[in-house]
Length: 413
Image 1 (cartoon, rainbow, N blue to C red):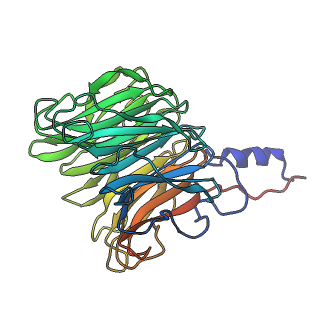
Image 2: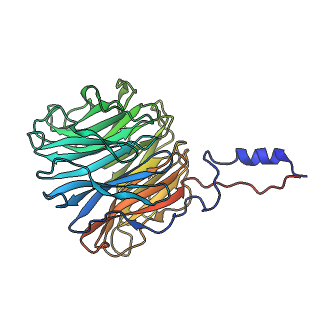
Image 3: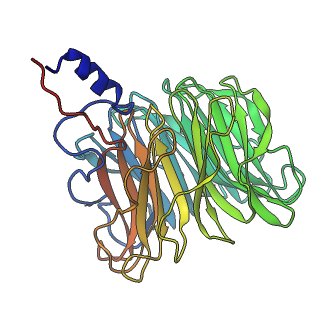
């Protein structure tokens, strides 16, 4: 006779995630969808952020839509995938180009968008931002992030904790005395800066750039970047407490050389995963798991299974338990670039095979971004060539939970 004891055993064998009914975990939720409403010219370089309930916002750069070169636009969605309102302009200053957007959301759906703007800070490129409520209403005016304005500040990244405090990181030219360096600025949920901007990298020889940032629910955060060392690129990181104090020294993540464009995601407890693109040898997407104290969890691992043409510019998102999904683009989709993904449990074990994200395969689909809600439902966005009838457009695909829910079958008597 089976009893409730077997039920308890079965529940203990379930991966650490919520138990849902209906759509199989990890399955696509409906068809892929077009994000941008305006299709004239180019819509590209999308980024996506999700709140804890799965409502999400997509941002991208759009050519000439604001009347002057590139501008930044956004579209909000309910957790069901239904658009909330029309697409909306984000940058107020429209002279010259505003581009390379990034976005982060707190658990309630309040979000912040950051981007590059040319000439707005008086000296080449600068970093600017705009805060929003969960209803999409702007919170105050757009604001300049970088204090140091000499030369250029490029490639902003942003992460938020559960309460809406956020941190922005970017690359700044010659500010650390040697080519590019990585700098950051912390903000309270009110939008008030928390202290001055700060240098992230300790090693300043060569160039340090292309930063990414991840935050746990309490506001502890980690910044990762690619840095020149010994004539080749490596991936480095620096952990910080929620008050901005460095936690230990900067560290190198990769075990080989020639690594590029890292991405990072933290779970609610501060465990984090970093992924990056490897140049050579063995081109592809690689990753490394870390505990919340900064200790590596196992060796670095290969993400992509298909290795003929490698993998490029990965993105990663974690649920609150540390299960994560990685997406990248690869030249394996009918002799063009397509977007592919791989799901992982919190211990780094792959969950099923890698999968193709885009359904539409003519021409190129690339530059993916991914976001997850607290339960592991996730959404991927990317740019697709000529799918909307006019150069590049932005498309997306929603998925069920990252980790499959596999309950034993039982009978209670």
